[in-house]
Image (cartoon, rainbow, N blue to C red; front, side):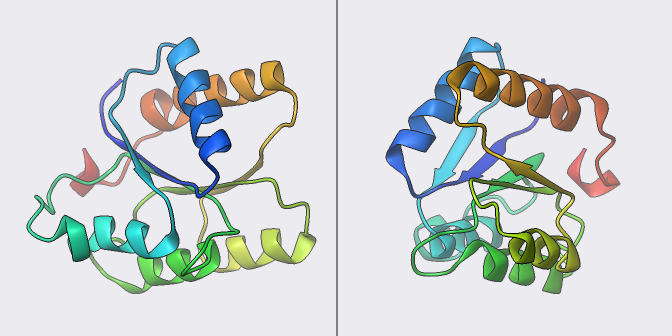
Length: 146
């Protein structure tokens, strides 16, 4: 599978679980982890500690948690969609939130998908397999992300 994955997640246990699930499913893509919303925006726009990175090297997909410190996931999504360089970036909200208003707001702001994190590890592994299969192999990204 080609393309980097940007995983925006502040919970270290969820990061480990996600990385383990991807590894178990043999998803060998490079995974960049942003621990908060500001770090995610810095990565996507080449600012902060990511200043000077190759901006042509975009992630194939962003897996975005909603409940993040510094800048919440919905605001990260708002900034992604507001900038012409990232407006078409595939973004999957990957969250434990069961709040209907979060789902509605995510879709209104242009999320490509909304996935609730399964609590059960085996279900989480299967969800990670399906996400990887779809977003990294089946989905046709916008031309500038190929």
